[in-house]
Image 1 (cartoon, rainbow, N blue to C red):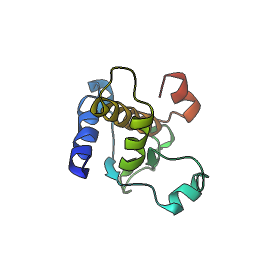
Image 2: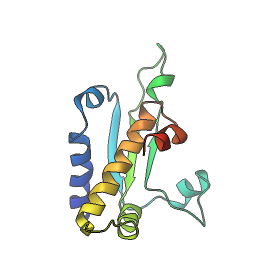
Image 3: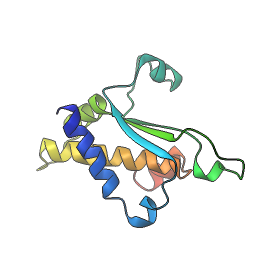
Image 4: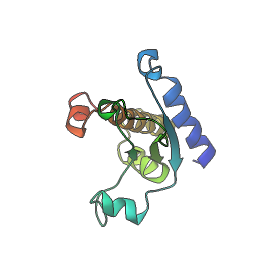
Length: 129
């Protein structure tokens, strides 16, 4: 899948957000990159093992105070190559590869948006992300 097609899937996941969540996104950019850098993997404790489908960088809404302002936007990065690999490895019976890629990309976007709203990884696992 080429980068533009993947970007379209990420955009589609954002467009499909329910209004109650989409309307509350604040000061955030969502981008895709080919893969995480070695530095990012090292910082996440994944260098040499594991992978990273997406990354949230910023100040979660639950930690923002009245002093929050004049800051660069939070950033969500969705990593194309790991998402494609995960989709191939986790394809469900009867699911096309394109559908699996769409599902994994969507789940990754939702997971990272959860971090933007202040949810931890265990919180997100409890709700299936």
